[in-house]
Image (cartoon, rainbow, N blue to C red):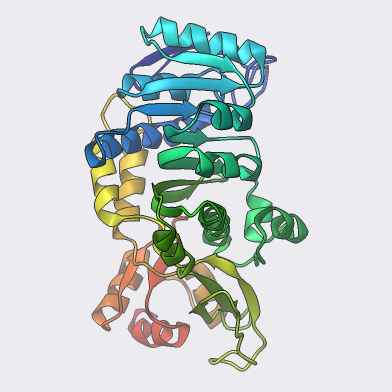
Length: 373
């Protein structure tokens, strides 16, 4: 069937009966990833403004080629790669259907990057973990590496051993599991890039619909790579009262007990403790979203929330806090405003509707919001 998305017209497989993801019996196509692709195109547009020299784009797992087609329409010189010959044929046909000169190649992306790299922008969007592809990406990309991870259970600590194996860190399953997963992912990517004397700095990241997505700008200086490693560290989490602390550095010094309630704490790390987005760049990406995008409204809302987020390594679930306190949850906006009125930084967080970020401790939040109950 023919699908129109963001100004692109592409042929995709017919959906299986009852399939919610739009996949057919042949080449994979997921219509629920339109928001991901809309934000990707906005990032590519904004990045060309940031660095006009960025020209070549590699869609590493092309499938139908829809992401590559949309990158081509955004002005990039596109190469689509896939290990499925049918996918390559379909991607090439979709490039031609949109009058694009890009190429579709039947290659393993690791071999392609080593043989024909570097590319200016490399996009890794696999099913599951991206880890088997990131070494070749960071070794053979000039400017921007875009990464999706869909293995959220290992990332957030729900599948603990798998998370330790794949990401070489200790994840912990907490109420901020989505952000834990994102920061575990960025930590692994930053450490991988550093092995190639390259700094990988996240300029935009989000967690949406069971996947984590991050865009990392590269700086090929060893001193810059050293600086990114300084943004790694540990989170110490108390399950009893929800208090948490963080510590920068590659050596953990967990407290003997929770500073708030005296219970034992769990240690997560090394995870990325730095900014997961550049606020100014996120605003530029927001402005690059256009009305022809099917998920324009959702993309703009997501980017607005991201740009305004208080930069802390974890977020809180307001409903879980109120349940812990034995109190009914007030309106989120009132809760956030009460924190601000008490002198704390506070904002909503994009992870879910009751997620908030603040510089206040749990005890300070309880005191600041007491008049709401």
